[in-house]
Length: 215
Image (cartoon, rainbow, N blue to C red; front, side, top):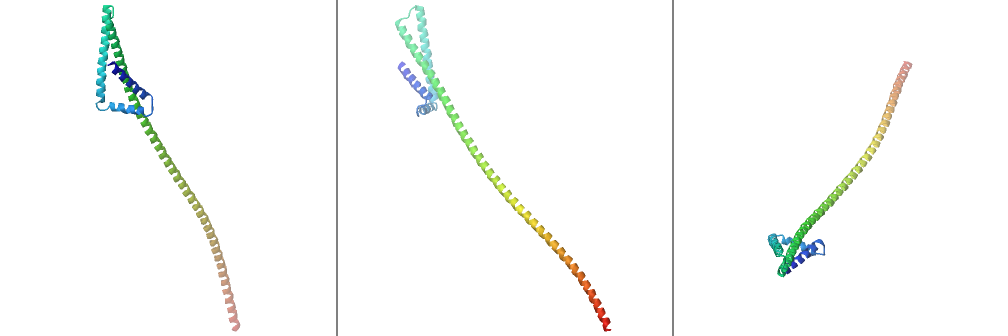
């Protein structure tokens, strides 16, 4: 029994050491082993063993107390009782250390699983943040490109508007010149009409004089 307890204690110590110190893939191997141990019938088996060892521990403590009480009553402890007392004390100590290491291993396994879950969550959160940053950057670049296009279009429209204004001014100037030319032509036409009327009058006067001379 004591040899078996020493073996279990050393095995638990090795597992606890591997969980606390990362040595290559050994920690992952220990974690997978504990995961398998906690699935299926594993938890029930471990609880049964823990209860059995607890009963043995209580029995050993009771035997130690019994031997001590017997020695107090007799005033001396026989060599056989001393051997039994030391055996029960060693057995109780080994069982206590074994149960304590089992509890430590269980807590280490729990917190390591929690830490791995948090790391995965943090990693997925970082990936999500990076994706959002990329999307934001793409949207920002797209918006900048659209703003640039709109600015180019506005600049082109302003240039067209400026050209249209210049053409409108030129056409207005031409219209004014044409209007001035028409006005000048109308004035010349009126002068010609006046000259024509004067010539008609002169002609009629000349014709009258010619008729009078003939008569």
